[in-house]
Amino acid sequence: MIEFSTPALVTPDPEANATDLLVERVAQTPDSVLFSLPTADGGWSPVTTREFYDQVIALAKGLVAAGIEPGDKIGLMCKTRYEWTLIDFATWFAGAVLVPIYETSSPAQVRWNLSDSGAIAIILETPDHFARFDEVHPDVPAIRNTWQIDLGDLDKLVAGGVAVPDEEIERRRNLAVASDIATLIYTSGSTGKPKGCVLTHANFVETSRNAAVALKEVVLDPNGASTLLFITTAHIFARFIAVLSVHAGVRVGHQPDTKQLLPSLGSFKPTFLLAVPRVFEKVYNVSEQKAEAGGKGKIFRTAADTAVAYSTAKEVGHVPLGLKVKFRIFDKLVYSKLRTAMGGNVKYAVSGSAPLGPRLGHFYHSLGITILEGYGLTETTAPATVNLATKSKIGTVGPALPGVSVRIADDGEIEVKGVNVFKEYWKNPQATAETFDGEWLKTGDIGSFDDDGFLTITGRKKEIIVTAGGKNVAPAALEDPIRANPLVGQVVVVGDKKPFISALVTLDPEMLPVWLNNNGEDAGMSVEEAAINAAVNAEVQRAIDAANENVSRAESIRKFTILTTELTEASGHLTPKMSIKRNVILADFAPQIEAMYSGAPATEGHSIVS
Image: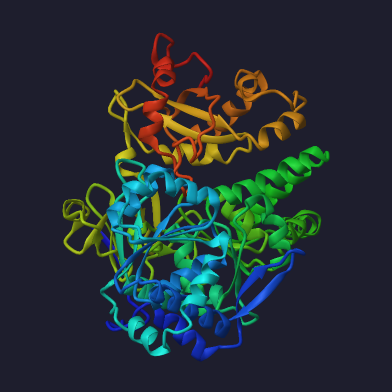
């Protein structure tokens, strides 16, 4: 069993809780800008640390006046915006516990989160959120308070709490110690009912304090670190960064509408970003297709190849003179425009939830943006490992975070222990016992270390496909490179107990008309027409052939089917962090899967592999 540990950089404090992070920030930099709120004219309005603190206290008083008691659970269904973090800290200052609900959750999911957690109140954002809650309200009679942000209910809460003394908030905020519950986050539930992860105050405090030191180049920029959050804050990935930013004094803005992301990046000008690989793929693919439409596709691809070659050579320690010259030319022609499109100040990007792939890692690195891939789960308060500004290897998810130990079990499963590991599953001792081996959390992921302790994720333990011939295949190794193709929306590798590996593929609805137009096809054709179009099938085949080059013939995809149904969170096929719900997809598209194995040999059908 191979194990790597990184010692904690900060002495743990058993009495500390999450409110201390804000109190300490106010004491250090009360007048610094901690948040920027979007204005109607496309600008940003500053909120200082002191102003945020005052608003948190005022809202906490409102919650107290409304009858919220220490330990009470409050549901929150709200997209990524300033009020999310305001409510988060106000709940802690009132001594209560927040239960996040994804803004895309169905009424049944809302009911489960509220009933299982025992929540007694809920804060909703929009009329649509309220409608979904109202549908199941009779099934959760414990909910006695319902507030809606868009109706101005936060202001009403604040107005109702003016008589609550400061001493009561100070008393309440000091009730929780490090080992107490800070939040109850329900897993996305790719299989079975979502389980409630009990994250403690220590999980947030110690992980934030250690991460701030480990990532000081990112969050402590001498000119002022800033980030624009667009990933849902209901997910632990963005939630942790939001809390870390309060602790480290990072200026934070919010843009939940990804269609407005580029304009917001241009005006906000963040120094680092938080994103999933699909975002980086999209930025690259959109840029490539725009260049193609303008007759400069070949130039863009040559520039991309040069960027990858330059970064790779730099990593090895020697860049040939010819490559340097070529790189400088493309830096002015191509790279500088991409940097400007992302705001011009981005130096780092933290990427998680799925592998990015070495090519994109090297491409962005040449743009002057170091993508720090990390790995973690809800159960690890987001990060367990992360590449560092001073210690980074493209293609890996980095070494263990300070205060964290990671080991690989004999069967290849990654196990984690440390300051970030959650306490238990809410009211589910059996699931808790099954996921722990002593102090070690069994992640369900498969991985390997290099000699320096840098972790590489190779797949999910439960997702390993075993073909009829006994070959073990990790789907992610094939899916991730195929998904990077601009035409591909999602890809799901199948073949468990089958004679060969196949794949279900969907087309990206945004990129499809662009690609069709750029390739001399009818840009107005439907997804159904595109699925049987020869040029489209040939492009998907090219993406599959490229992925097949990285694996043995026994592991390669021999057939594929293009689905005419888009796999989305709304369709029930993706989790809120855009991971595929493999079991659901296998069940829903069983006929299409069986069709690839009935009658036709492995060298016939859509995909032909020589």
